[in-house]
Image (spheres, rainbow, N blue to C red):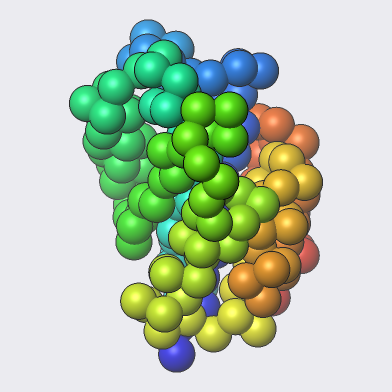
Length: 162
């Protein structure tokens, strides 16, 4: 079985703006997380992004813009040897679409990844900057780690064993 680090996007991998990141100009990758994520990858963890993108439901940005952001995220991290196994996102928002199970704190996207990549939940973690990230991780059976927005992941590496 594999072990994984699940990662929220905004505030963990790219700069938190306090609201939705709607344009490529606003999308700023957090360079201080290149090295710790490479270390986790070298320790055998799959790196999987799970992000709420309710701005899609609100019409604040398009799927094309979101894909451009994810391509840029992957490009910049890959330049430092970091590969994301997959990027999952929920495009729903409760004010604009019916209730779903994929929007965090729902755990459906994590559960899909756990099944798809044969992940050992007991050796896996979810790093996020919101309580809903930790809650989604714990619902899926992985250990949640709450960080401050834009906090370097290097500061919490000691919490990740195996």
